[in-house]
Image 1 (cartoon, helix red, strand yellow):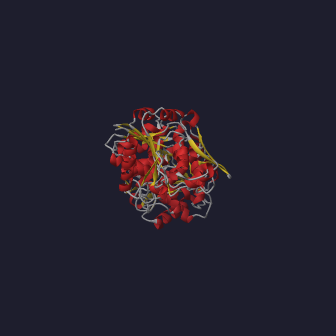
Image 2 (cartoon, rainbow over the protein chains, first blue to last red; image 1 turned 180 degrees about the vertical axis):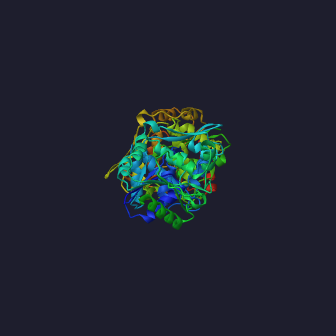
Image 3 (tube, rainbow over the protein chains, first blue to last red; image 1 turned 120 degrees about the horizontal axis):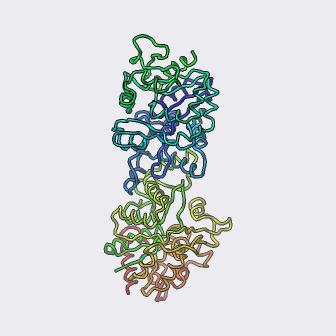
Length: 304
Length: 304
């Protein structure tokens, strides 16, 4: 069975690990969002790819939900004391990865090649692919101005309301090697419980990826990132209310404009009268077991 | 009183701190060696400038003699696990500095500007100048081949005998802004107890610096880095024996070819019959007090 998952960090990474626990080695391909990528202290940081890598390999700090377990923060503290930027939290162990990747990128290697090597280093039999090797960057349009994603999300603690989201560079971006093949070959296509605007749409904004998904002959199943109409973390509920007019499962499903056949929603959000394209399940991934159970349900729906 | 010190790391940094303790704020200019500079994990590292900065500001790890006190090593360990180079030891706090400096260099700023800013950050009233903003790199010629300095010193733990030392790039290098002015304006010029081949000659290899020193009208006093004819640390004694034929004070003084008027030597190396250009003192800087006492003696000799 070949499964393709479109995912951001956070919930996407938790769900990816659930799938990884359930599937056989080599069955999972994860296409990760790179719209959040950011240059910090001269280093290229890919927060979503890293959350996926750390979650899949068990290196992630479970409580924090991002970065590495057993982390220290001395380099960033020192950099800030020497006048460097300290707004984006990078732990020392995390930095080791950014140093290696940035050095490779500067030597002209592609993000997808480097990511594959990193995955190999931790012995994972997963294909982890950035959506694109090209530069796609998410910008949010707010009443206070247009901000680069991390500037708004971290720098301004996403306090500004969002009127629109743009994926700069997406018009001319090509899918990373392996992405189209994985989609064409998949027995099921899944969309993680990630923020549609911020994590999934930057992937779909790559024209050829969208086309490949439109041409699918298998089911595409997404998991709603909302529970009781609210975001588990992050600003999605506020964004949906303002830009889409509500936070029901239908509002989530509509974001995907026909690319998703079934939305798995939390039991708390299940419609009173059953609807064919909204399947209730327990979507809150409190721990690894819960993520595994959710993965099983989603795979069942996908293969039904 | 305006004092100029030519220095490498290690003994140079200890002696610089001794001088700094003795002189009034603003009286000391240190011209630091950059021949040891190296790119590690894509970062520009200036080991001698950093040792000087850390020693002068009290951040240095006294026991180790380099790097920062209270250091951790998680980023490097992580980088190595991800396939990055781990041969050059960089602590996490130390990395913070390299990140900031490398980012500034990539933005086109000069090493001398950046260094001045770092010195300002720790509130030091010292002029710390790289000998040059241009790329000068020390290479050692050994029976096993020619090596870049750090490759030989750290990578091969300087086990190969040295037949020659080259300062690549020095022919076309210009002194950093402020260097010639500091030398021309100095009331005394001092050379730290650093390895002549590896720490001082890369400075002197910059033609205009050598010329400015030749044109001096004040005394130039060096401190011998040998005690009982042996190097306190490092390979100098082996280098001198092989390339200069011995390790007496005279062999050290000869390395400077007329640029040094008086060599302060350890009491244990004092010639049996007094010689005008060899002044005995206690040169071993066991602690900060010893460094201060040595600085006092050297300043006295310089102003005699």
